[in-house]
Image 1 (cartoon, rainbow, N blue to C red):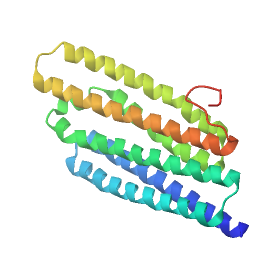
Image 2: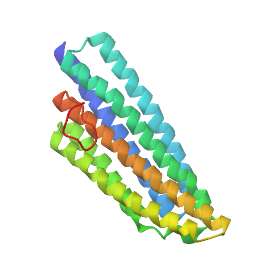
Image 3: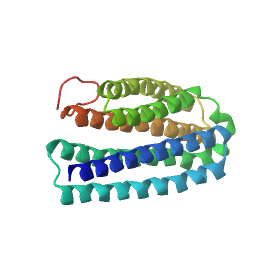
Length: 224
């Protein structure tokens, strides 16, 4: 029975990794669509997000099945509950990628705004790496790597603050409604990336919970 249960847990782990890879691909697609101002590519992000949502619910069903049929011990139950929280955050990360795609048709109308903020590309690289490291930490039960992910969120936050400051100054210095609208859309992209990083941090915290049995808040060393 234990061997059968372990196989089910291994299958669940593989499904989580698959979902993480799908979310990473969705974000990369959204960022590429932004770089190229490609509305067709942006529409593909919507399709990718549908697939992410579907696998989230499939994993959730598997978690319920394991709880009901296998009566897992405390440590295994902790891992399953953590996974159920992780897939919610992963699905929301997909929503942030879709949020970027939603903005692209507006940016296409004002292409000169798109290249003004290199910080967005930096943010994209950071949060993509955070997600990838979350999945590695989850697979290897690596608490130290999970904590490194949490630390990287500060970098994304700093870049967001820089973009926010620049955009606010530009919006204050212009009276052209179209330019203001375009800058607002760029701010939306920065906000989606900043939120993506926050959600990656949530996933990292759940990895720590699986390993240690304790929940930690962002940037603190004290258990909740």
